[in-house]
Image (cartoon, rainbow, N blue to C red; front, side, top):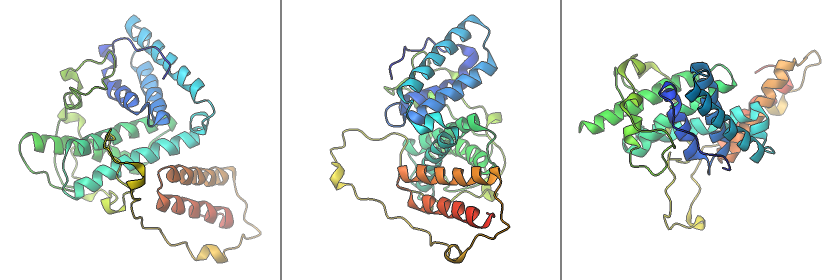
Amino acid sequence: MAASALPPLPPQLKSIQHHLRTAQELDKREPVVAYYCRLYAMQTGMKIDSKTPECRKFLSKLMDQLEAMKKQFGDNEAITQEIVGSAHVENYALKMFLYADNEDRAGQFHKNMIKSFYTASLLIDVLTVFGELSEENAQHRKYARWKAAYIHNCLKNGETPQPGPIGMEGESFDAEREEAGSSSVHSGATPSSSSTYEANNIPTSNYTGIHIPPGAHAPANTPAEVPHNTGVTSNTIQPAPQNIPLVDPSLYSAQSAGEVRLTPEDFARAQKYCKYAGSALQYEDVSTAVQNLQKALKLLITGRE
């Protein structure tokens, strides 16, 4: 990205450091998600402190980065249209969440899965740029952040984590320490104990009642860090089998009633479903694409969801 490096992160803005780190890590492979991570950090930073000289200087440089990215990707619908951007970020966050959940339920506990849970929670934070979170996404965020802390602490203490939703309380997870030694360190963000998630920041409710999508329904595995130089050529990679949902038979015979009048909100929802479907196809997630297209069709034909 053609933009000047950021100055050191002021202590007042420590709460956005991991979102900025995530943006840096995604710059090459997911620039749209990286853009919105920075936008979230910018908006959050402005609310925290935009008056002190060091914060004003930092946020000004961050704004320069956002403007540079906007120019670079100005022809990308996900940057110019919020509804497309929201679908893109949500799809990526959910894909990362499902990868980690799939690994968790299979009993495959490792650092990459922990980071995927934690990064998914950060990306759900980013979704607040587009408005209030849905109840489902709010639950996913709490669960993912808690799971990252729980599994991390189990492995650190030599214990075997319990897979899937369980009832646990107050865990803390030092994400900065986990990333120490990584080559992609945000310039200006120095490791410190302040990045530790305190127990009162981790949800303490029992998660056995939360409706988390089973890992078996996850799309193809997408780790938080894509391995480099694996020596595997693209023509040896086989697509993961997917369970394609059946087309709702009622759509074949459904006819628009003469009295059905679609409101502007109906058109907006139908458009949103189509955008979600398009974003899902970018990740070859056929099941999600089909489901959203069917929702759009049903809404347009019948006026009901």
